[in-house]
Length: 164
Image 1 (cartoon, rainbow, N blue to C red):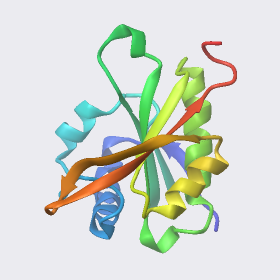
Image 2: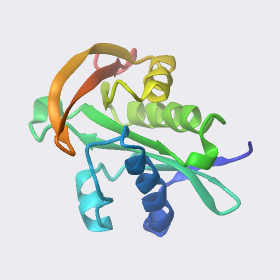
Image 3: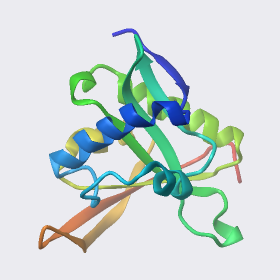
Image 4: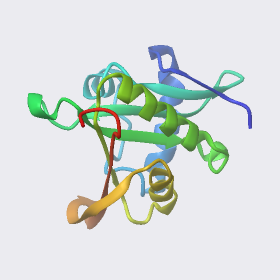
């Protein structure tokens, strides 16, 4: 599949929103149950490191980073969000997005990327492992979704060049 990785701009939002909605509908991508409006999403993610995979004007996937804390000591630690459209899964979109996200994060001086992934989302766990993430642990029953307590696999990738 041919696609380009580009910087996400606000004009991508309607398609990014649709890809996000597809992820939510799987029940295994996020605790979110509805896609937020642009302003809320925008405010909760870093202004940098927002990417889309695009082919023929269609967004196939997106990736972005969120700060894990406002404390300055954690300035180089962020949480990864990555979503791939159902029609594009298994075609290298996630791998390309995550690879570019890692590269751009290191240019910004970010030393740790973390991801919280439902254990049932095996494809995402494998994707992150292939990108150099390791499993730190399992947060058991960390949150409820539709009345069911869900575990989250905590994964992280420590830069080999930043902050060492």
